[in-house]
Image (cartoon, rainbow, N blue to C red; front, top):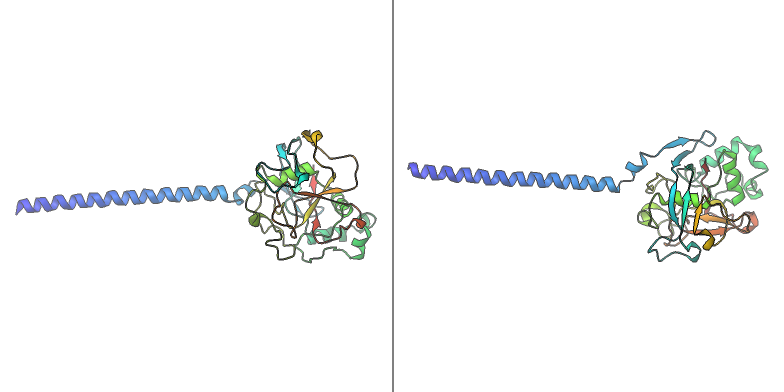
Length: 294
């Protein structure tokens, strides 16, 4: 009897030891899985980057601006991007030697109307006539948090100057749009911008899509953004540049980023051209702006 009891006791201890070891293994496996999931979430979550962005509010327009540190990048068609247009090539090295402030979002209709209303004397002589004819809001798609659109280059330039800012150079715009990424887009297009495949034929409110690593929204899609440069193709003279400002003169100004009515080839290098004056056919629902400051 004593021998049987001793044997059973040994079996119980072995069983307890087995289950105890198994539980410990399951516990530590669960902990490792949780740690891995948290690490992946930290990498993917744009909010962790956005929260670190240095921002300020411009009292003249009430909009939030994000500080962009100086640096260097490869401008133009990204490596392995087969969808680039001919005017996005060749890629070339650009240095931005001075930091700048850039609007966290596209200029909204609420901001635009607020500024125009408060400063009629500034804009009456500078904003092209069709804006006056259309009232305070030239946009086709109406909504306070929608981007203002229907803008000529003259309109956009006058607005930014009126709030103590300016239009970005094309190089500044792309540097900010990339957010430090060397890829054409920093995430899948549907996650970061409004284009023909998801816009349902109109603009959308700003800041609904994923921000880039600099905390900027809608740099790709929704509406084209005017920049200060005259349009010119990239060529050998742009192979290496510091703070480029484009040609001294031209017929067209540059638009960047694409819009809600464009196909799925949009990226940080997407560019086109448009005439500055109203006769250039620019008074449509896909051309807006965002301002920068020094």
